[in-house]
Length: 302
Image (cartoon, rainbow, N blue to C red; front, side):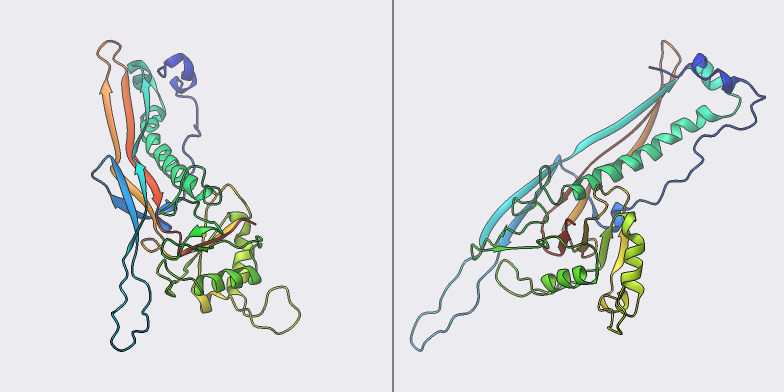
């Protein structure tokens, strides 16, 4: 397939005053605000879960010390994929275009690539409640009430169940859940939730929740306990989220276990067909998203 002059005969007319093409700038990349970007030099990346030692035990006088061992857990692997798109145009189309549109089409490969990266990264986030495609080191979805404690054999949860809509009470419950979380060794751990992830449909609700001094929607004088000045939350809104009502709290990139693996950065190539003289343009990159730990991430599928 190639772009030929009969397909765009109007671009051959100098009398056309204006051509609407690439009139809108793309929004900045969103997924790096949530995920750590790492360079990769292999065909795949592995992550492994290891739980450390248990707690101290009483040692009566004259008795041996109790010994314990670390425990090896699950391994998760992500295999990098190559993603690409091409465009070709006849030599005549490039030469006769009176408005320079064809010379801009090759540049559109960059915008298309950025959009594809976003959809790939946020596709993993959209799978967080089901785990049909992506699972972490506990072989479960990101958000679950039955995460395995590989040291104790018990379970832990990072999801509000039943689900709670984005609200003061919902954020309070989720922060309480995070602040009482333990590690695989059974130790209370320090977690700092810094990102409130929402669909743009919830942005006005989120603004009221995080910027109102008094309890939103209340006629009394109660304090709003989830005001951003108290909890440090910042809003990240993504139109790529498939649910308009689900929301979640996360630690920042590098602390929440989510990774975008850059195996090969976005690259552009061009060539000329020796038989037809068509110009061919290509864009490609190689990458994969993955997540490891589910802790430092808490969600509600409202």
